Length: 496
Ligand code: BES
Ligand code: MN
Ligand code: ZN
Image (cartoon, helix red, strand yellow):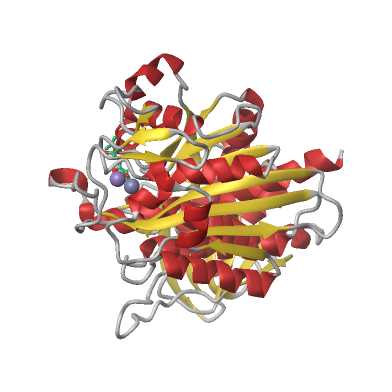
């Protein structure tokens, strides 16, 4: 999608679809202006549709005019209540209303109600991400008609075009994440994830190291390797690095859970456990790979970014781990696997030990870790666990700017006793109540305590059954924008 700024006013713009953000009560008088331009009377039509400019309302009208074939009005709510996220939702609504039409979409909004650079960027992102449609697995791709050009209308300073340059890199990262998550488990295997990392490394000049099973054995990653004992797929421990052109004053590590399929193992997923959806159990790895794709193109200064994914499948055969097996992680911790379905934390344990050895300034992991987090927060909000208030603030800020829901959850030390094992240092699974908290406490055991670390449970947000805002139904690409914002904010801190 080609995106540009245009100084044309709605009264003069010509193209295919003209979409106007209308504040409640139309204080700017855009509706009379459109009546005049198209020589029509809109009153009855708007009355029928009960369109008042309230948040979430929209109305479209075929005009059959050679200069503009349809008009879309998008309700924004009261002008004074506008926030950056309103522009995101309005952009997505405009995109949905312009589907099935080709040519250009002109989007006019009260950009100056917030920071206009942010407003145009998020609206443009939203249009592109809302129009995304995945046709890779159909024998005959369904033609997805939509405008090829987006024009952001209004008196906007030309300097904003540099803000728009970030739209493509960020959307490409989100789309990569969505495609990796949506692809079935016979297509996205651990090797396929390593291949995508290799392709990214080649195309964007990143450094890549892939540890094979024997390398992981040599490092003593008995926790990670226990998970894939019953799988025919080779595990891959993927380490991708972005190095800035100048000196780096900060080093951060992004860790993603990369289970390309989670059957549950001998604690097989049965009943309502949605085993058929467990291709999305590599959503954490998709988010960190997507973020690396964006970062590699945005090239933030001053920050070195490492990405780690301990990828494998959780399957069953005669070699699979037994419920009750005791394994040893690469930091020497022994773990009694009382539930083979709590496998994500076993893979993350060795990845977090490896991350700590890189001696970074911060570690952030993303994982579709627990069903308990979905029960607690639903599918629009991810859970955030960290003992570091400043890291919590920076991640919450990054998520807010990204329009991604996040909520800080308690790192309640007293629940650590739920992980006590009679025989080993730890069990991998605590009691069902508070299950996403004990999962976070388990991970904490593998991070060097002096390193600020945060865990984000994306079990709910990785997928949207019905679609919402700028996310069509299916894989959301959750986390990419938050991580990119957060990494780029590190740079600003690093430069001051
Ligand atoms: N991948 C699942 C978590 C999950 C469940 C993600 C549902 C999305 C939707 C994870 O490996 C898992 O199975 N967790 C168990 C942990 C339990 C055995 C302590 C769970 O949440 O049931
Ligand atoms: Mn599991
Ligand atoms: Zn899992």
